[in-house]
Length: 163
Image (cartoon, rainbow, N blue to C red; front, side, top):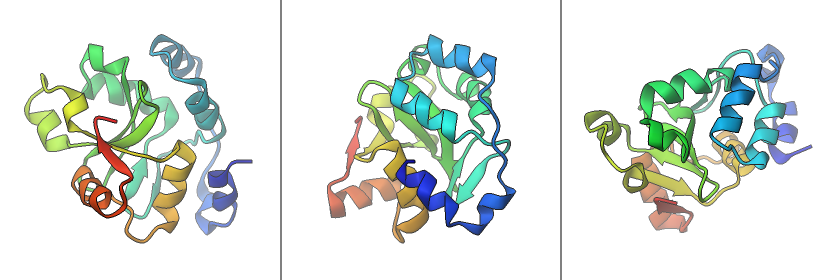
């Protein structure tokens, strides 16, 4: 049982979440983008029939990742980043599959210029995916967008541009 799973058992909202197996379509997409196994395993355990929200962080349904990513990211970026949710202001939460980092993408820059290099607008957090989900629930000042992650980085040395 991972840290996030243990935390979820203590949340009253868990009763309204329903597990949903990862669809074959989503499994094929994960294979095509070469999603690292540690993320696949996490999503396999934490795939729900609806989005889930903790404080100011919203995680999308795992089976919606394909449509979200193909609608937002350029083809070449979909092999390097996987959007899994967003903060309340709209900044996507993404996994950098090259560095295995999870963090935020500045949405205002991403949507204004589709040719932007995502590496330059990704604010990675030095957390495992379990810790990112867990801290979003329990840490009072956990960032909800890329700007807050940048400030958070200055205070804690846990976030990095492009990583």
